[in-house]
Length: 312
Image (cartoon, rainbow, N blue to C red; front, side, top):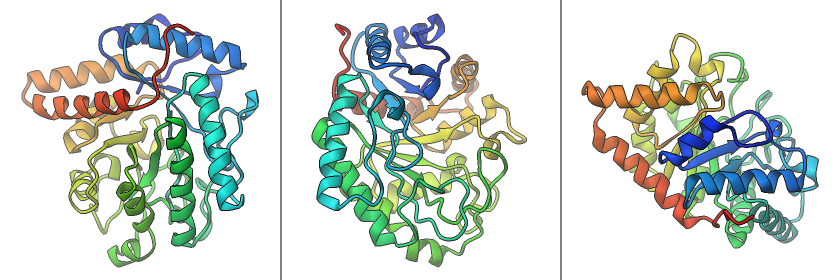
């Protein structure tokens, strides 16, 4: 899932799409107006030449990328029925702008001081978090926008921001099971299109490896939670992941662990990721069948989302 700079589609990202790339991610740096954004997503669709995923972080709360152009997510404390209605309205506006995947809802159960989730989460009650996530998914789905439950297996006990430093969530397995897994299970049971796996290390699950690179965590997502959709990383530029690892190492480990989609929020990382995966297959370090499995899941999701038109 390629990020890029600027308000128009750059040639490098266009080439990535033309050669089979299926996903881009938009940030505030890519948006100034509705007309500009629609022209941008039209060019993405034209470069892709078929179904394509155009994703954005559009959450209830403070991470609301489209608010600057008048498309706002509902407030976290909105009454449930109205919350679904407002989310559906937002979803229709997203589709009209050429966006078909929301990197939301947050399914983390935030307990205690949590710098990464402050102002973004429904609080410490797993049942409340679950219901908000399901209501958000319902509204998006009624508009044809896919949803992403994040940040598996639960970011609610983070005490440092993974954007800035290595993050360890030293909770017992029974604690995670009792208070943090249930919103993800509910979202998966309801058919959520994607699950974003976070970068913290969970010693109770895998003592040394960030969750996003852990075969243990990805196997748990598939086998215990029964998820069959697209597993994706959080942004690969975060310090929690990059400390001591090259982007080439990260890419091969992530796909080998079971990830289907890698968020390359630094544009310069995209060609390095592609080259590293090709080399890993050529050298026998990564099974080509694993790449095919990942690609097929991403293509299937793209085909099932609201189409992004090349006609504007």
